[in-house]
Image 1 (cartoon, rainbow, N blue to C red):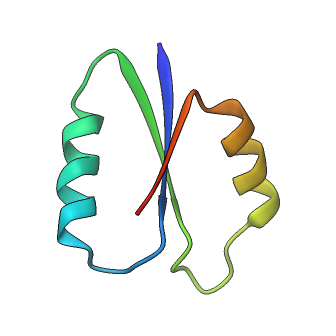
Image 2 (cartoon, rainbow, N blue to C red; image 1 turned 180 degrees about the horizontal axis):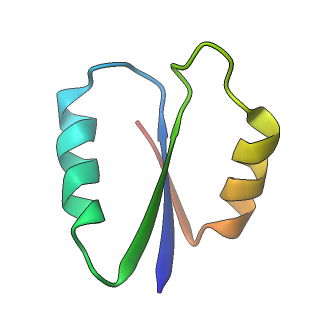
Amino acid sequence: MRAVLLIVTRANDALAAATMATQQKRPETQVKVVDLTAPEPDYAKLLEEIFAADSVAVW
């Protein structure tokens, strides 16, 4: 299974939301989303997720 990490940098981004929804529907893909718009993002966890993913996209 392909692991995809999606990093969100802007709140309420319609294009990013639509793309993420499409990717999450794919059965062969495991999608994780990290929201950097949160008050206190966990950067250590983000770093772990980046190296664990097969693909990373920043929105």
